[in-house]
Amino acid sequence: MNIGIDAKCLVGKRTGVANYVYYLIPEIKAIRPNDTIYLYSHTDFDNPLTSNRVVKRIVNTIQSKSGVIWLYTECKHAIVKDGINVFWSPSGLLPKLDPKIKTVLTIHDFVWKKHPESMTFLYRLAVSLLSSQAVRNADRIFTNSDAVAAELKEYLMRQADAVIRPAVDNKFYHREFSEIEAVKRKYCITAPYFFVVGTLEPRKNLEIFLRAYSDLLAIHSKEASSCRLVIAGGKGWKYSKMVKLINYAQQNGWVQCLGYVEDEDLAALYSGAEVFFMPSFYEGFGMPVLEARYCGTPLAVADVPAMHEAGGNAALYHPPTYEGIYEVLERIIVRKEKPPRPNIESVLWSWKSGALQLSQMIDQLVLPESVGIKLL
Image (tube, rainbow, N blue to C red; front, side, top):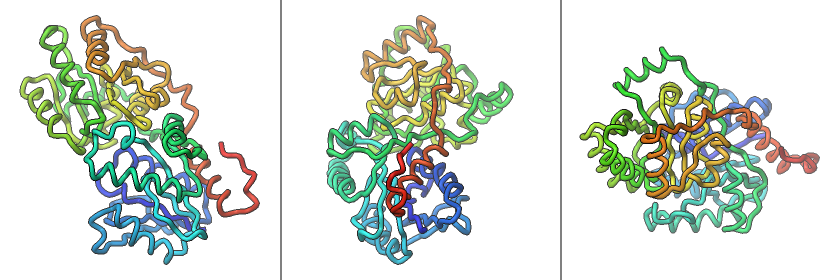
């Protein structure tokens, strides 16, 4: 069987969706030893996943400047040419294909519906129209959380066929003191620190978080100055206000911005943090929360539905408002309250279990005798 995957998310530095695809592919390959996997992209990418059964297909034409246009034109033609049996789009967008080519779609979030103000008008309009069309086109749909599955039903009247939550790579575990100190030296982190991970974009709510932190620092300078705030993450859209705040905070010595950090260093940075914060207005899941949880880092994260799936019952949840953030910062910094160390015993999923669910979906679509298989 030939399985095609929209792999344009693997271009450049890997974050959320790219990691989701990157870690599922080897598990799918192991489960389905007789299938060939085609990775389609409009731009070349450096990826160790390629092998004799994982084929990288770079379809690069004049359309390639726009990944969205490419998906609906050049990629669509290449899928037909390669004789793909099942095409998986993890991007939330899906062109209408010949009915003989079965399709699987992943929906990661509904930012365009929940927080449209965090996107540009034209991009929001395009995503809302194309997402609705993609849901109609898909033979099977799975989401990355129960929260997004509920939103799919509410907004687009479609029941998710499965929920496949992100897992973490086995590199995420609590690191020893010597490794933590080595990574801290690498990034010139010289004081105890709180840690934030996320792309610099509006829905991550860093602007309000930084304002609350700054106001607390002004009133409780002695207590707040004992810990630095370390932020890891590349620039996203509409980030100019955040960058100004971060630059101001860095000049005043209470924030250190690392930019994009490779996975190899993240585990030690999580492990060395006093508390991990993720104050997002909205998340489809919140992979950094799960990564920090596996590293044993105390969690203080926004009280949004999907984050409960990532953080479990040991996190300190707060409203993603100025008042909610200020209160949780005061509890931790001034009152010296610390969230309990998280556990991972209640994490009952893995990349392998997710790949098994996806593999079952593929069989249901292509093999008539598998119709009765019940998804995990």
